[in-house]
Amino acid sequence: MLHHPFSAYKKLAQMLNKPRNKESGFRCQTWQTRCKRNKAAVDKALMPHSGKQP
Image (cartoon, rainbow, N blue to C red):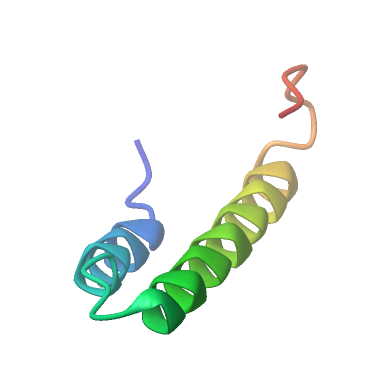
């Protein structure tokens, strides 16, 4: 299995996942959503013939 660069994102997300207030919590949520979108795009690029669609 390829080493996925998103393991680093996961660690960063865990760090950001401890919101000190609502604003940082919202920012973290937005960042995680963006990360998921990026991951989906990368997975699509890496596996264009995959039949699974998110």
